[in-house]
Image 1: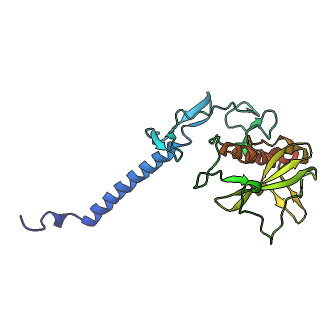
Image 2 (image 1 turned 135 degrees about the vertical axis):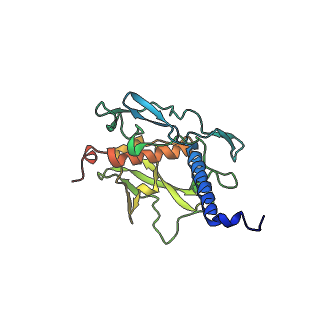
Length: 255
């Protein structure tokens, strides 16, 4: 056979292009399937009630991951069903209609107050110490002398109501930034205020998400000197819910 007789009739560049397309399509399929290890199957409202959707491609085979603390975690985790009982009801009885929270809307876990069921253990630093702690147990950390120190400042809600006074700040020892203000409530007890919901002025702290009296129901932590991942979710969700449910007028159109 004459040298090059086979390849002379084949467009190698086109063959390579087709091979790339096949590889890329397989890669997209694989990555999309792997992305369904968390959050799937989707549970949504159907015409016949709650329906479960996997979509295409289907769920990948469960894989066991070894976690940093020696425990294992399987993904996908199983049915995907949330064990919590939804504290909500449809405003009207047909699919796609919005839900209204039941009971205290700030604690219902609905809408902007929804939260994930993260592990009920503290996040850790590289040396296995609680990552977010108050300054009183974090030697070597303090407030920058050039900025305002909110300790002692009065905390006011969106209505001007006084919630209490700031008694400490909680530092993220890995990121070197403050995550929470600790408030001593006038009504008694202490709660945390996420920094992203706090507006610190030269003489006080304003919080637009909540009214003054609503700070009393902010979820608390089991330990006075550390916070778990689940507690972080619940605390932040409470303030998030306040952005919509703190007062009835916030549910109405802006215009």
